[in-house]
Length: 87
Image (cartoon, rainbow, N blue to C red; front, top):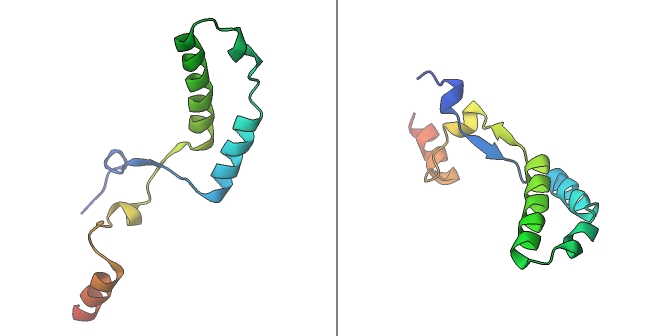
């Protein structure tokens, strides 16, 4: 079966390196502007925009590898071993 690039899903990698990068990015945000908002909804929107920007910057969307995209969630390591033994 031939897989096209558009058929392979985009995922975010939550590995320790990216988590540390996110933690650092959130720690470096200047929150002084947050206190200037008089309306709670505007303050929340500012907060949400900052956190979302850090998340999207640190956990970028990448294409899943072809090998992983063919894996089925319900096939466990034991089933895979049995399949290989059978074949």
